[in-house]
Image (cartoon, helix red, strand yellow):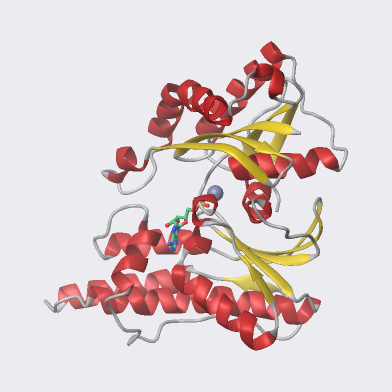
Length: 333
Ligand code: KG4
Ligand code: ZN
């Protein structure tokens, strides 16, 4: 089954053709990062306008790269949420138009399910497993009992991990998006600052928290600025990254102990982080836990992950979406 997938929930206009949920025939991403960089973050209205400009070419390129025409495509899939409403609507309406004109079934995919499904691409991963999702919008651990049977174990009570990377980068004078910039700067630093780390206890609900850590770094930097001190940016980036990663690791470890699952996948933009991957690999070796993460290009937003998720959704017998499909700013995990 070949699925044409479209994703436009934030600042990437993306389209892909995915075969049987695991094989990517094409994956086109038109990033707007350069456009939003001068504002220090994504401006929703500008994102929508640029999706509108890009989407036609992005879809055409995805079909061309895959060597596919209308007759080769079995279904159209699109991210309907969570994300920026105006941005999502561009993809949703484009997908509706295409499905109508081409007389193909349309499937609505949750962005979060897409991030999870990134781990199925070019891999033999099968449920059950635990998934740590860490992106700009979410920080959560989910138990994936089956492809379409997931249970939320815990999530952040405040900011998402990626959001903390972006805000800390900003206070350190690094460009948007902050995650890759912090990672780069952290290589030159040492983790000399002790930063706040929540504790996950016993059977208590698992709740991540990143706002305390973010505020700690902001106060640290502002204090140094007020005293006229040089800002040891690399050491701060390194200390922050270690602490942010440690919290994700401890949360996943806690959930693994509670569920007894020995297979853990990480997903979302932050799963691209080299320290996070190293920490999980280390844990995997020491504890005999199988660790999975997506290829780097499938960690941050893309449409291949949406095509992969759509395949498993269709296989579960889900109904196709109607032309009254609407975009949603939030979607339950
Ligand atoms: O999944 P994603 O592309 O979009 C959302 O669904 O939110 O995640 C974007 C987030 C941003 O906050 C970005 O700073 C972070 O992922 N990110 C990283 C890295 N690459 C992207 N965070 C830490 N280390 C990275 N290498
Ligand atoms: Zn995302």
